[in-house]
Length: 272
Image 1 (cartoon, helix red, strand yellow):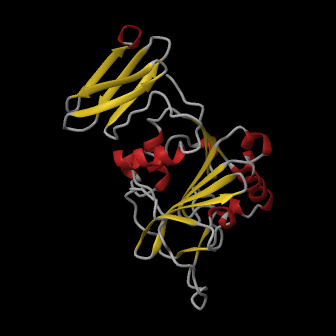
Image 2 (cartoon, one colour):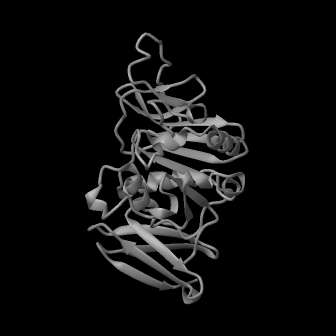
């Protein structure tokens, strides 16, 4: 199957011991951020690697474009006590500074109720100990078009005025970006799978690509997969309604209409 040049690392305590699942089926752990992330990216044309903290080395990091760390405080998914490792934090921060993207969700890099990667993400967690401290105003950037459907996490605050807020709710930042050297830190307060959120996540992951990605759908309800050797493009409409879709290929754009819950197989050797 065709895969894009984008390479993503999923950082957790488990690494390769648990790939593409958090244990059991999706419906058994619907509130875990990571399994919702995996549900979304499993259908996207990216190369995905699963990393433990023992694999946080310069050589490994240099092979990746994006690292995702997602989970609640103290969990194996966010890393828990593994974040008590100054060398891992240094290597990750250095990698972002040189151009990488660190995407943190819920309580990323959390140790003792604070984020070890806060200086990269631009946000941190307050468990009440900062009650007498002032906080930066949460003002959403005027040009933000983000439409992620996510809920806020209580206690999240901006560490300074250099963090761009792209979404907020009830005065709390839910989606932020922060430039860090040549790279950036991105924070999401949570993540839940839906076609619309998958579409928004794609925009986040692909924002640094030099060109518009090939063989991806412009409709959140239509999935696609391209098989280069057979020159076959598979389209699947996951909604009950008729859907229009446009796919960018190496030879041009393809426009198709799919009926509700339908599949379409296109022979691109004859189609273009």
